[in-house]
Image (cartoon, rainbow, N blue to C red; front, side, top):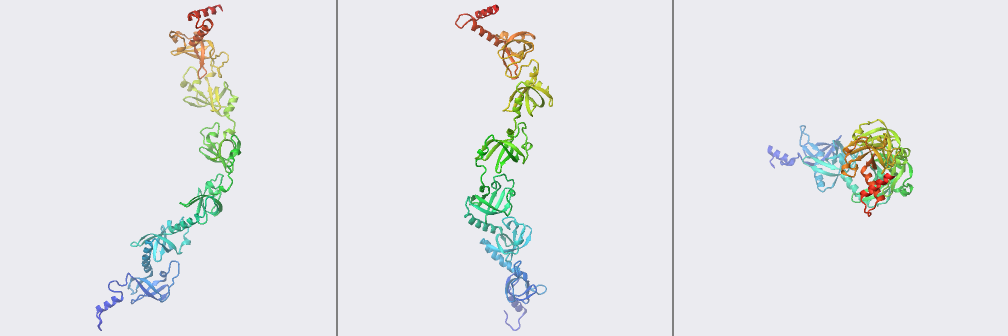
Length: 570
């Protein structure tokens, strides 16, 4: 630097640069130390060795929510924004100085994955702002606490630890998390607490939260789940029916998973088990009263006593209502009588019957309408194989299409009756176990065979009878005949018209012709089947038995001749 008595302008410029920190850098954009020379209102006057002093708001010397602790004479670091503004004043910033220093410190902490202290001081979209000793960070709303927090007021302006998740100094972006600190602390606490707990241990806790599936109970720093099925032996639709938030409950530890640190709790385990001795208390066949507690598509649950429920399957609900939703038969809270069908103590299941507690309409119908009875009913439905007829006692019977009318096909007979028509039917068979009633319409016509057991009424026939029949119709496959003048009608197949092939021709007969034939059986509709062939064979066997033997040497013609002579003498 020049030392002449009369410095030049260049000498003066060099001296000024030296006083301002050198020509290379200067003060602007740097953090420098200064001295507080005065405090005026809310401003601190700071001298950093320039021709003018700078003023910095006192709030920049304190953390959010706190009072500035600064006095005249204190030495502080400030950031020089400008050496001189338009008014000749030095522009200083304590916040900028703290921010620069904070970024250096925070980068070191971030690299070490260490915790940092900060203060939540503001709310922004999606989260909050945090002062980390000069640097401002963003705290997402999801990172405030382990569970959603509705009111963050108590956490504002309070120094607390945070974990830095992300830093970008170029963009001035810092993201922090309070939740990570809480989870880490909680995990440490849970690890310590869970070591002191054992399965089967009885402990008290406070109900913290209630969900649809259960409740979370605080066991003193660690939470356990009390599932709704473990609250009581009786049916619980929602946990709030048993407990409330804030209640102190006595529970038993059912399971502990030390790897996942999950604890399952139970309340009903502290009560006596109502299922003990249930088989002796509710024997099969016992008639009981209960209350319908729940209705599903497959049946209804009936509570027999608190904690004991049985299922009435939909198939056991009604004798006559089939394919009907259980809700149309019973309603919730309804008192019903049931019969115990099965008890499985190991699986804690009781099968109940609702219809068994009522009289069986099929049995009642069988008692009042034996086979052969004539009853009137209404055609409920027509199917491809018959008619369903509504009968007294709210039961249905079926008339097979072959039992509708004589002389026509079943398909044609189905068109003779329509839905809603009142008809008279005869009871052919009643199967109480299978809940089936077979009916007939054509059996009521004149000349029809009697119903039941194969024994006929006046003018009817039975198996092996030899009767005189009259030809009603000649067909290619045989003859339609009638026993006597007004007896049962039946059929003789072509093969049954005689033993010889020449005799097995239906065209040999005429309508009205009479001859003898044997009853060889009945078809499904109780209609008799006749046979001339069977009658001839039976007559030959009888003749051989009376007039000859296998070793007599007489021919079949001789034997039959003797039989004919004997018949003429008689």
